[in-house]
Length: 185
Image (tube, rainbow, N blue to C red; front, side):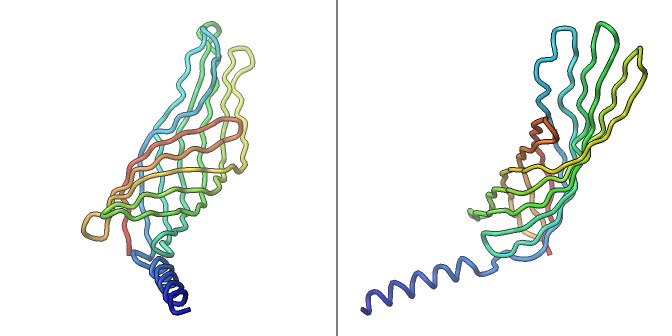
């Protein structure tokens, strides 16, 4: 019986230590990177620019050693396609707000994280046709966002962050990779 109680006490102690708010508290940051969308095969007479610079700002709260919640705004840039035959073109720009939960695994001075949440996006589609003129259409929605990354916690209140995210904007799969700085309180 003593062995069972001792084992339970050790397990409870380990669980409590894992829940201790080590490195807990608020943080904010900014990142710059590249987003790309899979536009598919649009034919030999079409030029495609399927990537652009992405920037984002975010803030979050490290609840416990292994858990954080985060919200942010990202501008995913613009993707476009143009016909080399009739000079028609289509471009789409998008931005969005992300709300996500992060699972964090501390490894020395690094934190490896996985992210899962929702992206609330807003997109504008510009169509330029030589015969019909220019038309702008807007759309919005929400989709799942998944990501992973690593944070280097160098001495001081700051950290360097590198992350990958995959989301959908309408029917387009958007992949992004970004690097940035995070500051903790």
